[in-house]
Length: 275
Image 1 (cartoon, rainbow, N blue to C red):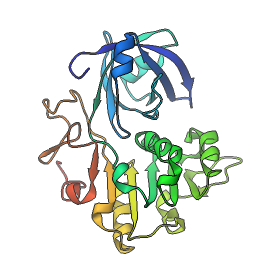
Image 2 (image 1 turned 135 degrees about the vertical axis):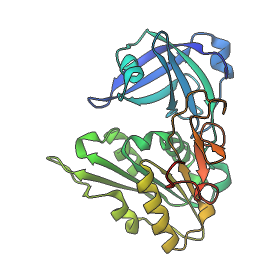
Image 3 (image 1 turned 90 degrees about the vertical axis):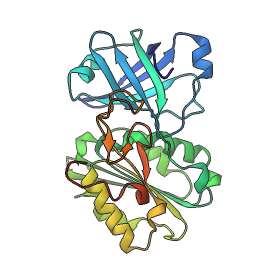
């Protein structure tokens, strides 16, 4: 599964927005389907014959053993190729790769998911994991920001999540649209509304790097320790095996030690030119 792509059938294609779509996959080989496993925060390398291979976060819950789910934004040649696929088409899958969110280690704590743009995708599996095991965690807060209100995907899912006990949802858009009821402005302006104990919490961040750095600075001012903050970093991951060097961050590799890093480990390398 790590070195060679395994054939998977697209069982469903969902168009989320004009440029974002979701693929549900099932391996053609039943044994591979039964043996495959991943943890929230990890990613797969998706391969399209004759076009190329890209790293994509897994957004399904690990217990959903019948299928794998990936949400993709059209940004280049390979993603454009994937966007033309339909149910019944076949692709290649390698994985799962990378580190995962520290969910088991943070039971009985307040969990805050802070995301920007399609950055929500790397934490969706973690959100599903936590909310399906709601009694294992204390307060849960989800803060999501997008550039334009029309870019927000999974609107019904946010509403469903908010209906659960002690779950806060805060949505922000830099530019609003008719009917938008969320905050207008950057999501960092919503952090003060989140209900959490600085001494007993875990923050999980993903999205634009400047946004995550700004959030970490705010949390430092609120007394949240560095080891309670986790970031998912996007890099140009081409092999998934820490061999090609394209995703190197200082001495670390996003595809191996990451993409999920503890802030205390990565803070000396992010936001630095050339790293």
